Image (cartoon, helix red, strand yellow):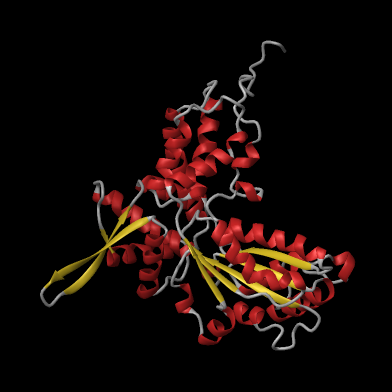
Length: 399
């Protein structure tokens, strides 16, 4: 038995508290770097809730990894504690609209998070009720349990029906809530998201709007240093944190990406039985993070977006070259054949153009408009940023 292979590796320990490097980890306030003004703005917007009054609705914009979700979760948790001093009860629900993308799913998730069936006697099943019934149960839960409900809708631009914004923002005005009130924090990567909303929703929802700017290299460096106790003392070589910060700042100031790279670097050091995390580990971790990020983005994409991406990747492979452009019409023709393969109805060309624009926004593809010549108009060229084989594998893994 003593000669058996030890699959758990060596005793070299790299991490002391790896949880600090998980994206889902909500740090203490002193670990939130470079977002003092944003936290103050959010606090001022929802401050009335701590006294049992109706808070301002808020829309928060900014690129991925700029601290929007982190700050929203932190400040609402702090509001709960402050409200207790005023004998006010606040309930908070966080809805990821990438996962809960329909109105029914979002309302069900909100009700489930705010409910305590032993206290209310109200059940919130995962399915089987109409949207209107989920709303009725939600209103009863909020009225019976809280003075104020704060509902965070993350990636709100991904929800299929904006009606939930109307329902939530006018719940008191319409008499749905009689004993309590509600506030909405909508989070979006798209700065022009508000422009797509119905005028009635704009007037009732968009009371406060804040834009989170990307982190610079110094801020990212401080964020990483504030979490360096995730590692044992002396494990990180001096150049590691500056190297990670430089990579993340170069790519749009994404703190989430920086934290992932640092965690992956530690994992690579462990896997290779190293006593310290080196800059070489960081370079390998950067490649791993790119693949991981891409797989996550694709896994959360709608099925037709995956088919459009697969069509792009297959065409790029057929053309046999790096940085090969694919015309939108070419991608659309193959996309329709892939829909037939999967026995799925295909979308119209206009909607596929929208999907390609969304993929560009997510930095999965690049687009460039080309002039076809006099009297022929113009057309769009699309290029994959990542290797087509990686794209195809990610599409297939996420099915």
